[in-house]
Amino acid sequence: PALVFRTNMIYIESIIKKYFKMYNSFELIQRLKKENYNITVHQHDALFTVQDSKKLRGNIEGAHSKNLFLKNKKNKFFLLTCEEADKIDLKRISKSLELGNTSFAREEYLNKYLKIKPGSVSPFALLNDEDGQVDFYLEQTLYESKFVNFHPLINTSTITIETKMFIQFMIENNKKTHIFSSAEEKILKTYGK
Image (cartoon, rainbow, N blue to C red; front, top):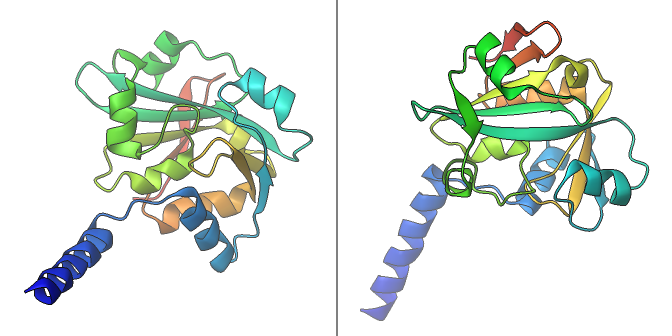
């Protein structure tokens, strides 16, 4: 009976992992390397804010991001990823992108949909959004950069990846990516389904 129980538990665990895959930092980095995305991984102290990042990250090539995890009153969720120096008027950008009346989503939703902690928000966390509940918007400044930097689901590392490879990765993982201009206040193009 104990062997049958253990065998059943292993089987159930394999089903859960197959259908409810949740990535962690190590798995994400290994996958990006295995699939030849030519990333560079930088280790550093925990970064919680853009100010922390500027002080502690050192000299890392490429554009750096800030990520806004938002929710509207109709319980729709959005991840806006902007260049770290961008000044985002949440009310204006929400209106121009037709997101509705948005505010920052609570930590419980961050955990529920992206399965990460505050300070670790990045587009890579969308891999954990199995049901596509979070719409992704990437600001034009980052899109036009040769390299972009994002946390790999944890804020003690940063991944540098060529922007065109990042877009390709998102498309291959069925993550629709809206490129938007905060200056022009509109969506410029959309990748993915």
